[in-house]
Image (cartoon, rainbow, N blue to C red; front, side, top):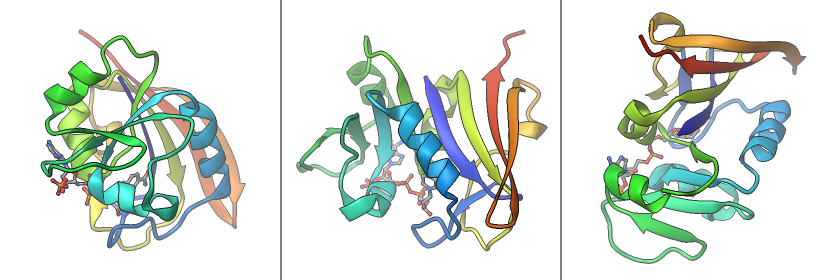
Length: 160
Ligand SMILES: NC(=O)c1ccc[n+]([C@@H]2O[C@H](COP(=O)([O-])OP(=O)(O)OC[C@H]3O[C@@H](n4cnc5c(N)ncnc54)[C@H](OP(=O)(O)O)[C@@H]3O)[C@@H](O)[C@H]2O)c1
């Protein structure tokens, strides 16, 4: 299982239900990498998607403790249920937010990170992968966007 996330310099990922700074290069990378894949998304992040709707061209698994129906998404109530639902799927991406990344973190093997060189106030964070010995950065591509230094990174989980 993989994850994809954009982080600020302090590994903040959002504030008050949204991302205070977005860069178009990251949006394009997200669209390309996740096209055709299965996504695991939390209910708060879903609200921040365009129109508050599941993303088209992908299978959307909505992780929530609530019952109900959401057009374009399949509801799963626990991480285990999410795992069972996506068994046999090709690529599966955890797309946030913070509590969903944490819920699925033990199952992640690869994480696509876009580092955005800015530190807006955040109330949601991703673990600092540079401080976790089991995670190794395998790819790096630096670019500049809106005057900010940014970097596309890939991290792989290493097994002892
Ligand atoms: N920078 C990025 O790449 C990125 C990506 C995604 C999101 N974000 C940001 O992250 C922030 C949102 O994160 P968040 O942590 O507040 O919300 P979230 O993870 O999007 O959604 C939280 C909700 O998901 C459900 N949930 C989470 N873990 C669960 C579990 N183990 N079992 C069942 N349901 C579970 C619950 O839904 P119910 O309350 O419905 O039960 C919970 O309230 C926003 O600021 C957003 O912009 C940033």
